[in-house]
Amino acid sequence: SAVISQKPSRDICQRGTSLTIQCQVDSQVTMMFWYRQQPGQSLTLIATANQGSEATYESGFVIDKFPISRPNLTFSTLTVSNMSPEDSSIYLCSVGLAGGVGTDTQYFGPGTRLTVL
Amino acid sequence: AQTVTQSQPEMSVQEAETVTLSCTYDTSESDYYLFWYKQPPSRQMILVIRQEAYKQQNATENRFSVNFQKAAKSFSLKISDSQLGDAAMYFCAYGVDDMRFGAGTRLTVKP
Image 1 (tube, each protein chain N blue to C red):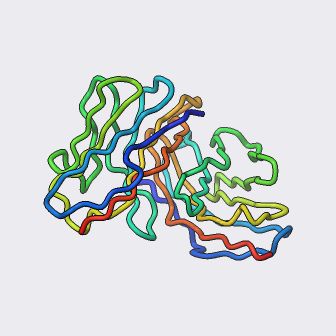
Image 2: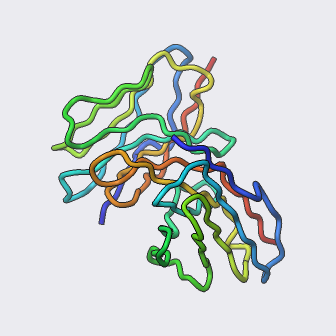
Image 3: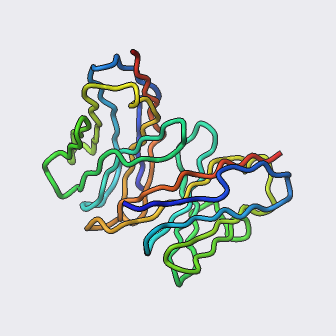
């Protein structure tokens, strides 16, 4: 497995502002993922962030709203831009570790709880 | 598109008893992974168990085991000797290149 940390753990922000969430892992990983978990809901994949390439966004998520950086194999950031109350969610990063055929097993960070007023 | 369905929004079990959480999925792939994750109130997603679709043998991890029926596209989780610490949201997930999650089942454990 891997040890994954996220900063901040929680934040309360004003609408119209932006927040950058950091994700740090204790080992080098190729695949990192960002998820959103709205209150009482399941996880929805925002984007896949592989080092050395542009992030790949899922339908309904755009780079202008959720820019992602992946400067090296142990770190990534997700920015939530021009926030509105609808962006209030838990944001989780995960890393994929090789498990064989197809997808890697994903291990998750502790999440960032964002409240937008 | 792959979908994952958890038909039980909530389940309850008496401490020390056994409970089974259901999950079905839809895919046209032949090789993939299936997962059960646990999310306690701390919101940390914890991997409970993992199953490779090419393996016929059901995965087990201590008190946790799965019943994987590939033809039926069914992947249930059995928790034996339930403990109070098992109380959490349980998410079933399907993975090939990325991961898709079901809606979750909230498990309550009664003392």
